[in-house]
Image (tube, rainbow, N blue to C red):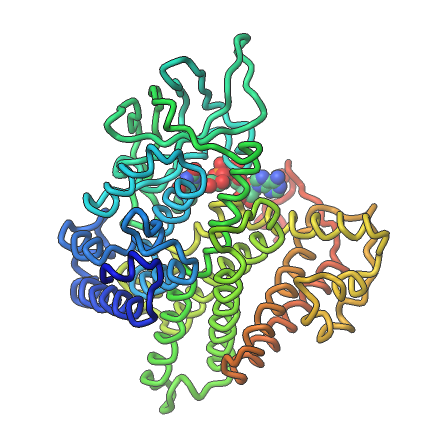
Length: 506
Ligand SMILES: Cc1cc2nc3c(=O)[nH]c(=O)nc-3n(C[C@H](O)[C@H](O)[C@H](O)COP(=O)(O)OP(=O)(O)OC[C@H]3O[C@@H](n4cnc5c(N)ncnc54)[C@H](O)[C@@H]3O)c2cc1C
């Protein structure tokens, strides 16, 4: 990046391509197969030399405004950095995602100016890191009822509570802490506020380090918080803290395709390479029909994820408030994380036993991608919310036919035309169990995603890949609509122990 570009605020394509190429080459070197086995896949943490080389490329600069020496918070650049990282290492991409979407972007949108200068300087020049603490041992999915509390005085804020599972536990220099205001009677307000904590302030003690199943590069644990912060530490919401939290979380969910993009592409590349080289029964694996079905699915995940990246780049810019973008954010987060997990599982199936090793890209990817379906909104809950949001709008319009509704919805204007038969169903609002909401949510996420794919195709993306993705999504939509319509409400037998041992019935 040269000086002139910083001053004018414009970046030539060449400047970004040179930046990303250097990053790409560095990652190819530090995550080479030989080093990967020794250093980065089976040991916890990140070797100092690897971290130094990675941070020397300044990947976090894409999340920092230009006036603070960053590249300028362009969403497409952020996604490209996440993509390049996840091709080589999903944990590294998540580490960049945590710093970017869960710390630097919220700071840039809601932080007080007096604080930004020092924090950004620290990130650019002193290799500092930041994360976000929301989850508590008793309040995960139910985060709005968190018990971490704060009180305010002339000097600033005092915060107390317990948080766990925050990515970069014990490692980050800065945290965004979330808490509820405590009144004189000890009651907690319904709103949630965010505070920037600097390590130098002290008062965050790691009381337990977790043996996380995967993502070895990232430390997790439990933190006890008892800290005092200055008035400038508080983020300033435009309206309520909860709306600010929704803007932050939706923005983050919309950027998941960046982390998914490189990961899915890598799984696809590895599958094609392995199946071309591996001979089974005197012919390459690639020639088997079932193998081709798996690889064609990987390709459809690749295309759908590409379409999501394009959508996010244009519709989740930093000057857009995303507090109300629940449908887009939940659609993209659920589907792309399900595809991440399915792509890793499929690659592991295709490579067979050699993939069942910690240092193999398939085995590692299966474990590393799993929690993406859990964090930042459990997929079961988000699929339910997608349907609830659609049903709420249908009720308002007094519309019961799903197709008629989706034909008018901006997220399905194009895809609904291709799904006229399968979506022509009436929704019985009064009779929607949670499991039905989830199934319909799965179908709807795919209908909206197909719209992203069609739009990408109209812009000139390879037509054979677009068609493959549309066909795959159509197939999945039929399956989930069918599941929704024919669901049997199977009951749970909680006390199942009596008369349930097969050996008594021989
Ligand atoms: C690897 C990893 C990284 C993380 N990173 C961070 C981070 O950086 N910062 C942070 O603050 N937190 C982080 N978390 C925490 C994460 O956000 C929570 O785990 C998540 O919100 C779920 O909360 P929980 O684990 O308490 O599960 P619970 O809330 O107990 O939910 C467990 C499961 O129960 C089901 N469930 C829950 N509620 C409902 C419902 N209403 N209807 C139907 N089913 C339901 C869902 O299947 C859900 O997955 C991380 C977690 C992991 C595993």
